[in-house]
Image (cartoon, rainbow, N blue to C red):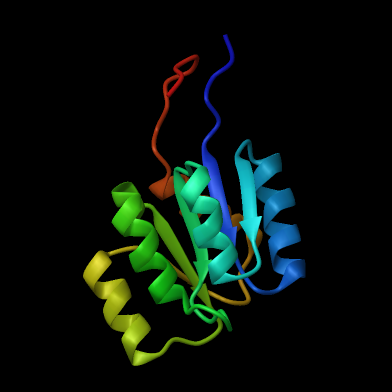
Length: 131
């Protein structure tokens, strides 16, 4: 019996980052979905379940903090299973990170560091266990 693979949603407006993270996380054994806008991420979350969300705080259409709040409202587990990414951080984003206690990784980052941070917040599954 195949074990359930952890599903991750990557939300970043930069196609190269979405592509790189999709490849790296897939090679690390995760199922990966990606969205290049906040609106696309929210639309995806209406029909798909994800275990973990990686989100850029600086997204042009719908800010990352807004996407986070809306996603966590319908998927409460994401309130503790979201990793924020950004090259710089606003005071508002800093307050959000402190209040939800979600990890934050500064761009540019090492893929190894990001994969380790994902492993820290991903749900643990026993071998052969399905969700």
